[in-house]
Length: 180
Image 1 (cartoon, helix red, strand yellow):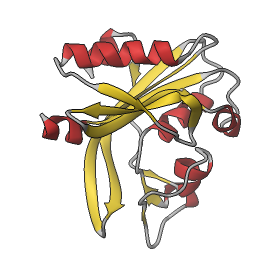
Image 2 (cartoon, one colour):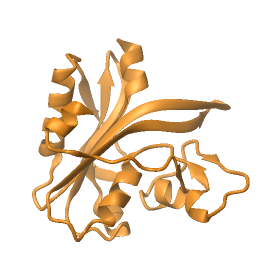
Image 3 (tube, helix red, strand yellow):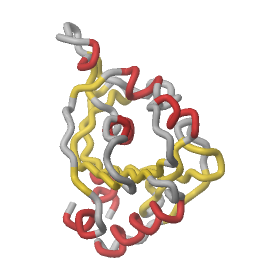
């Protein structure tokens, strides 16, 4: 967290409860293992967050009145249902919005983070419906898939009523440090 603050990002702390509309529908993604509450007190807090990027993009959408560029991040727990088990992961995600936000900008931030931690990583091309095709990658550490990086798709940006490019990465810290 200190590294990202040093790189000019502002830390946010969001609620662990969210909703499937934000986590998946607005992100143009299918549910990949959400834990839903049986008796939620509101539709906005009906599921446990399964990833951080949608939460951060939602924060950007609520801060359009703030001067650009905006760089925010969060480190925290996400919970997913995988192979019939409920698993908590420690993750960190960073998003940036500005007229000049692009893959290179977010990769530079991630490069600095990994260099500061003395961890080698690689990126492989993938398709992910939340990101622009050809501008998204899967992050690997010791051949273990640990995250995503890329430019958020225009459709997703429109779903959040944001009018500038958004770039992001999300890393599974539990997987990273487990693979070292």
